[in-house]
Image (cartoon, rainbow, N blue to C red; front, side, top):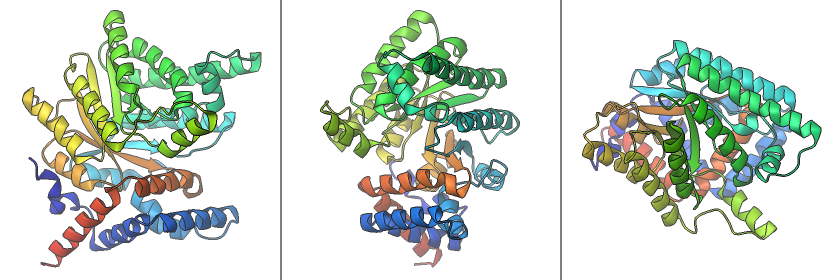
Length: 389
């Protein structure tokens, strides 16, 4: 089992030599922080100035990390991955829009994906971001129990209604729904809303899934407390476990505003926190389902070991593994090859609108020690294997 993720033939079986070369080129760029900073600045300028660069972006970074510009555009990618047993989570990755029209667009897109998923075995989950349905400042205010103006009260009711609509649609169509986690200062209000939805729609099994960012030192305690509430009120817990995506922003804000950072003091502490959450959930699968969103090989082996200890079948529907499209194919495809449940997050949306997501992803990769170099090593190994070296 320990060598499972080194099999590059399985990992890159869907990639042509050209796609493999493109992946190598992109990760080589991402490996350099100065190049990421320069590339980000140039790309933002070019898009704002309406320079004709979308074709170039589409042919390189976009097509590597995204499924397409709309859900139908993603179909060939989804179908191809599913031939290897890897499912898709269609992720409408338009970020940073803060008006009612865009919130309604995000709602309609999520409902559309739920209906789409009902017809496609390759899509076991739908997903949305809380700030896709409402302003981050409003979540923060609600989470702090601040007094809302009449207009804000109405606005929050619209946010609640959007959550209600998608959770009900997921329940009616029997499609599991992943709700992403975001910045800590807006998360309390989102958590409270998701818990309400769990109480309502997770009476018989986990349909609504929240997300725990385990680089936050308080999240395991939150999970245990939620478990107690679930036992008392009789509902199931669905939870996606990730390490987290806003570390620099979180630390900088804590420093600036003079409060203790919510982030674990080290990478080792985050890893331990993540693995402890995995253990806790695996010990309580009678009332929980876990979506282990991780690019970490050790954490993936840990989940596999717990499954083996409990004599669970590899395709037990209470345990899923998830990675981002364009990354960690060595984990995704080798797990799927062993018949584990695996789903790739497949971002999509208009090229220009998805750029904030792609830039965040590139910046994250440069800050995660070892991730990019591991990708490069695997790609090099596979290129050499194909050349017969």
